[in-house]
Image 1 (cartoon, rainbow, N blue to C red):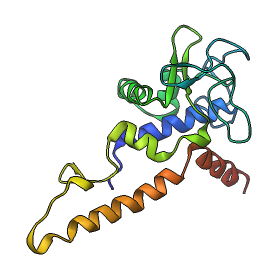
Image 2: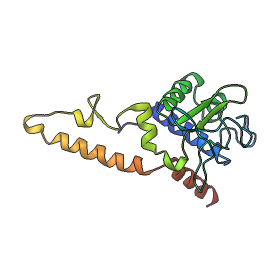
Image 3: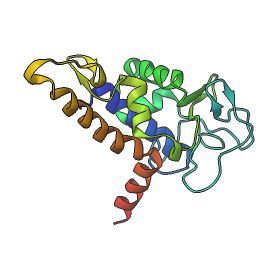
Length: 186
């Protein structure tokens, strides 16, 4: 598995948005927040689905959806994560199209998660910006074809793909935020 800069930036951006939505200190701005928060009960709640906003905030531990949290502006996100803004905008568009982010326009606008951070896996983010988790000669592992003595290679690539999928699909944004909090304490 190759993790491109685009995939790495997408994960960092999603974690920063998730941290901002939980009110954590790992948001994009440090001690001051230029992200433009939305008042509780405001109209910029995160979307419950890619097609529209949800009617209420997420609840429960690890429910770090954007509802009731801060909307993160792309410029603040780019600055805090050291990502070129023009490159980040394309990533944010892919994440929005995949139904992982909701955008709200205007001076108080920004980005928020569409679901709680505990429901968005690392695999979701990687697939949204990069397609298949593993490729062989530019094709998804399941499309790799061999003949003769190399026939067994397809099984190896499929096993590698499966092992990677298990790890990235079981690890959520909330898991990573909890790990960050634990390492900051200890």
